[in-house]
Every structure is written in structure tokens, then in C-alpha cells.
Image (cartoon, rainbow, N blue to C red; front, side, top):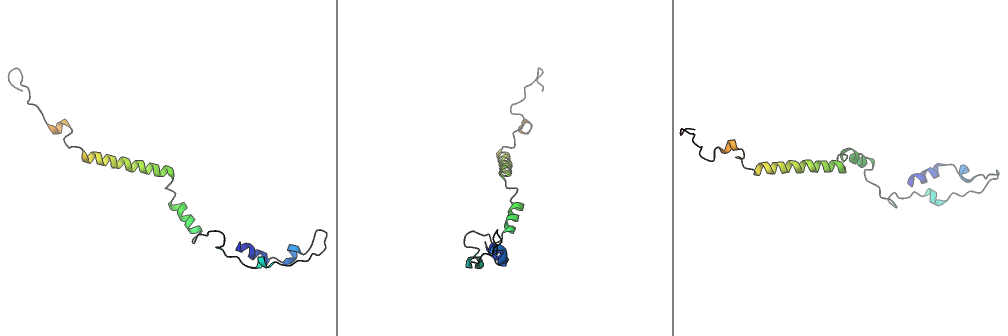
Length: 112
């Protein structure tokens, strides 16, 4: 709004109301409202850094889309689940690590 007041103050008054369609001169009084600058904070909320903050969020917050967040959540959740399961499992799961559980059966001549 402040820029409109500045533009209105800069324009010549002859172009705004100095003539009519028929060519007759019309009386023109500049209003005091167009000269008075308005406060920037009167109606709208203006960001302190403006374009810099929007560029920051476009650049660095771009990976945090819904699809990206879901993918990251699934990767981290799957990785943590795999880590937890592998840490809590026993080391002797494979039969080769456990070794024989029963005594071997002897053959027909009493040998292995």
C-alpha cells in the first residue's frame, strides 16, 4: 500500500483529473489520503526477512515432502528393526555352530 501512495504522489495531477472526455477542464483537488504514507504493519503481516526465508524453505525444506518423509521413516524403521532383531538373536542359530546334540550312532561293526 505504501508503494501505491508513493506512485500517486509522483504522478502529475493533470493526468488524473485535469480533463474530461469532451475536453473541458475539470476541477481537481488532491486528497490528503493519497499523500499520507500508510504504515506497513497496519493490515498485513510482513515477514522480517521476506524473500530470504522463502528461499531457505524452498532450498532446504524440499526433501521434507510427504513422500520423502514416508520413505525416510520406512528406511529408518526397517533399519532399526533389523538392528534390534540381529542384536537380540542368539549366536548359535546355525547347526554347524551348535555342533552335534546327540551321540553319534555306531555302525554295524561298532565304528562310526
